[in-house]
Image 1 (cartoon, rainbow, N blue to C red):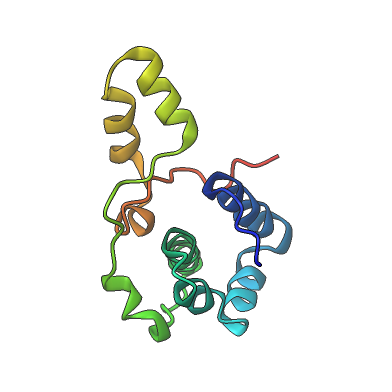
Image 2: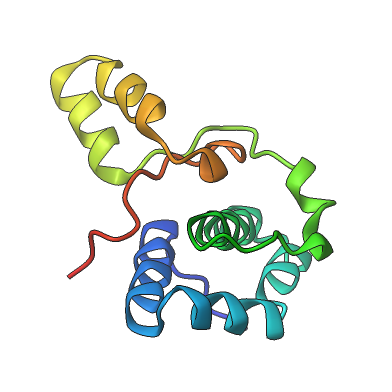
Amino acid sequence: MEYRMSFEAFKSTVCHQVKDMGDIEFIIDVLEKDKIRRLYEKKWYPESLYLLAMVDYLSRENDLPLCTRYDDLRAACLSKIIYPAGVIVRAEFSHSEKPKQESWEQAIPEFKRFNIVESDIRNVF
């Protein structure tokens, strides 16, 4: 049986990999190992689409062309918006949807396309 970590832990792991490997090496590693498709085939849709969004975002940031191998997945979208855990806590604590609305407005477009709210992939320690 394969272990599936929480989505928050997955996001953190990916961001640390980007920091440790660098943008280009990270992109190469993901594409060479076909990690996006493998996650999608396991029906781990949030993880797969998060990884695709990350590769697309880093490609844009580094003026690289998009890998067309995943064009079919770019038409996918999660049925519910996934907010960072901190945003959910702030919304619940404040009894307001404003933190969610603000985070949605500030989200990186490549992630937003899949209904994933991500605004700062570089802020890891």
